[in-house]
Image (cartoon, rainbow, N blue to C red):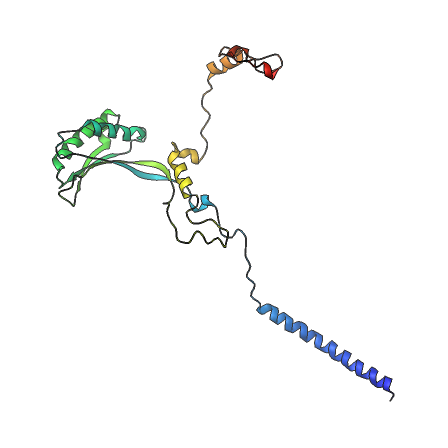
Length: 247
């Protein structure tokens, strides 16, 4: 056999051997790929919105005020009357929630608090609260030497959120580029406290009545303006301001 034939035969054996080993290599790489642990990060899987972390909740809560009472007081004082009147400004007369006046028992000012509570209940009736909705109840004071206050409270629907000041983690750790736990809590609390009618957070109010007198004054120019020009623009010549620069 010639040298060329031997060389061709050897190359043919190597070619067949490489063809047979190719599927084995593919299978081995597939097994290795299956064992690889990929750390996938799904964007948006964890909510990072302060409105979600600190939602504003509308619920019925107890609003209260502690009115101080001196041991030598002989009845309701002017300061106590002013404090109660200011506290009852937000009382909804239509809802007619029960008003509780809690009087301390076992304290050094017990007798003075009892006299002041009588005056406070009368003042509440003068403020428009029915006597059937006012209850005067005692509460025990653990310290006999303390001058305990009179607590006035009633239930009211309020907007509120969870308590602020939670710091479970280091806010300097920003590796995940997320808000810290307390982010936006103060803003949500301030918004909830400023809302006069919590129902406004649920939906809009219905439109009020049209002020026909004001609308007529604006259209006819009797409210300080000159009415409307022929081209549809407002005539402001009657308000005493120079608008020549706009012509």
